[in-house]
Length: 150
Length: 150
DNA sequence: TAATCTAGTTTGTGTCACGTACCAAATCAA
DNA sequence: TTGATTTGGTACGTGACACAAACTAGATTA
Image 1 (cartoon, each protein chain N blue to C red):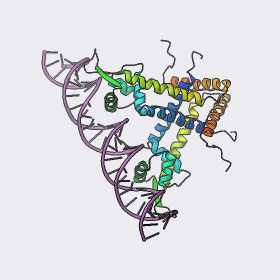
Image 2: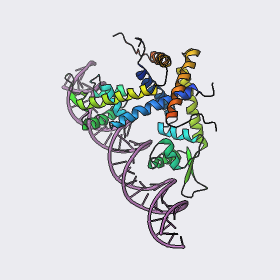
Image 3: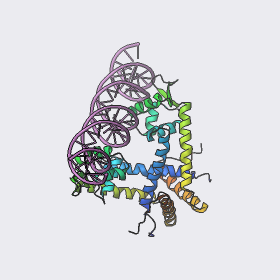
Image 4: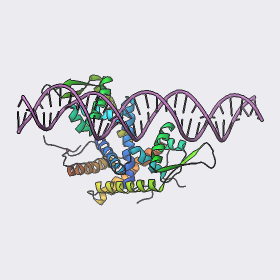
């Protein structure tokens, strides 16, 4: 290892905290916690039941109740009855909620782009290629195909 | 962008969550929360006051009181009076605390190594080089030298 | 010495996690 | 069809953790 390089483990750990904190900061600008942000994030292209939300966010269903309660109180999401199952409740973004998550996501993307601004085009391409390889093979091990042909 | 590659922003975000979750899982094996783990982590090579801890972890000092309380109740850290300031309290790891954080850190390092196992030596070296460059230049922008000559 | 900082704790509020208990609707079995 | 079970969701209690404000004791300095 070169004297001016971090170990790979340290580098990945530090990068993880850096990206995580960046996202947290952008979320906080919209008065969103990390978990609220994840909630709004998954709702961008879905309208799940409470139960499905629990699976998506890997939380207990009783945690989802409070999470959705607080978001609903702020007018970010709304509950409405499932047309097919009278026990079930569907959750979807309101216009306000969509606005918030869109702004936060755009700013976060800008942060990441800025973080990589110092890299040469070659290095950036190499980074993307290697990271994609890592993520795709990790996803495959979990039985998830990141690029479904559907 | 190639059809089987994620965008750079997505790749970094996903990787960040993956690494973060890995660390969280290893911490949970020792019944440690993320923040408890960070506490034990910084105590590995320091014996700070409560106030210094607040700065290191970027938390309010009133949050530190409870954090150290809970860790102390579990026998992971201990408080002892500062020899130079009778108001101040120094916090240090117990043998039990050191054991826990050492095990978690080793397992986490193993996870990261496994995650990168599919890469060629060339790719792994490229990843480390590019990430180090990103982190070092980001730290420099914050006025932090990751490699002090001291 | 009096006025003022500083270190740390206490108290109160809010978010968010979990488990348990519970209700109502849906489904399965006899 | 009835009765039992499963499933979707909520209510409640507990605990970790964040913050702010008020407080105590010790240090500083004017």
